[in-house]
Length: 203
Ligand SMILES: Nc1ncnc2c1ncn2[C@@H]1O[C@H](COP(=O)(O)OP(=O)(O)O)[C@@H](O)[C@H]1O
Ligand SMILES: [Mg+2]
Image 1 (cartoon, rainbow, N blue to C red):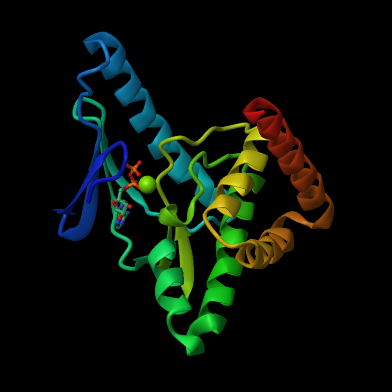
Image 2 (tube, rainbow, N blue to C red; image 1 turned 135 degrees about the vertical axis):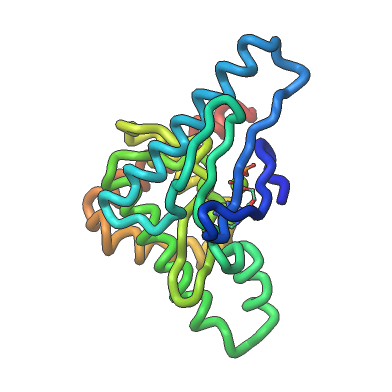
């Protein structure tokens, strides 16, 4: 499994089926910078996954971190990425209820992460996994602790760009349930602000 940044492979750890996520050297970066960056991202990702659980975010469990190899061994999410789930559901007229429920749950998960003052950084439908009746969040390689309103708004914006406007409204219902009406409204104002800034740059 290849993401944009890392290589994820199936493995076992103490007999538990897991995945290993490794960041391999990038040729275009100087060796010292590259190795520092990979180590820092690996460390941060593992910490975030751990801290995210304090506010109930469903995400993989970290079983081992090897900073020499820049590797995180984590529990395997046996499911379907939300992006694939939604595209399969859109072809089946009976499963729109499933999509609605999963989108709300995805919103709840991001809301819980933000409640821990963590921004995700890459919150598209590729980084949510539908597992049974639950939605898990993963891929915290670009996350930040003590996240600003700006970074949380970027999370909402990234999600909105990966779904239809109607699907985003459904997602927001779940988000609102966890973060409340006022905070969500405040964040959406920030989203508009970012969008207008982007339009200004594009002109
Ligand atoms: N805990 C996990 N369980 C199951 N599959 C995973 C897990 N972590 C990653 N993957 C798979 O590996 C792919 C890449 O992992 P990801 O963490 O998203 O890395 P990247 O930062 O490169 O996008 C994911 O899209 C997913 O298919
Ligand atoms: Mg990813």
